[in-house]
Image (tube, rainbow over all chains, first blue to last red):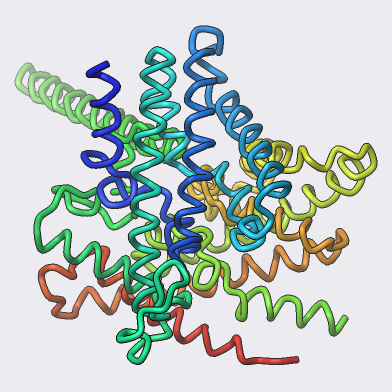
Length: 263
Length: 192
């Protein structure tokens, strides 16, 4: 039980997907123009995350290692389709306002990342709690950004007008550019406070995920990781080859010198 | 014809895929340090998205709609795209080494680009024909190309600027993206 609570804490605070890991940036920027959209997207992703973690963890000994990524993708895509159909039936207004970003949950790297890093290696119950923790962490992040943007840009919170801010609202914050500015301010604050964050590590690159593909466990980065590893291997092979060549050249020179001496 | 040209302009500028729809942000922020690499990535994206829109819309029209299984769209599209990228890579390697050398490095990265799936789904949601899907895909990808190359050009200049300590790295890049988004926001008032 303590492990499950630890999972919740890990997902919501320690490895918060939005504020710490900086994963799933596309939906984070796209749907947070209002608090209710952010909340809706967060909860939808949470539902998919829990179900996908449950299924993948239950099947972890059945799925062959080599085809695990396609298998994970199919499982996630199936749950996304189910959730989309449910939303169409019972919450049509949410489906309308989130639009294309619902099917795009499939390519959200948080879900595949958790599948690869946690659910495929751990028992079912722990994986479910991991899904709940990560999902709530994501929901929290999206809702917080959504509240901020809605408050500054529209003078409202969850659609309720806040009168003294409504007179000074800055409309750009609910539009597309505002999303970039809010995220820029957030990462700048994290830089300033030296808070733990993917963009804030030593030799951090400026990809949203931290860009450190070699040590990344998310399978979304698998392509990058393989590419970088292949490059490193090639560089190493090149080094070895050069060293060998140099040694050969040295030996040849030595032999030549000796031959000269003998002459 | 006129409608198709307007469609390209709308997809590339008015509804820019990165700056107004937030798709494909990872490569936009990650591969935009140098103009040449950005152009390579943009080229590869144009190539893949155009082919992927053609293939997915053909599959949608002649398989999914015909057998009344359109609810499988998401699953089918993501698998088709992942396979397609691999296939394109192998095909280019064999048939056109010059093109492969120019785009090859970027191809594996594109599988993770949500713009590809996004375009395929938009095409279906808007009930585009196969030709319209290809045109829309090309326009969207051209929009990605334009924005990533501009971004890389700006970032090359930012290198020489005196940026305050906390804004170094990703914050300044995001601010740049925001300013570009404001510029592209102006296209929204274009009405045809």
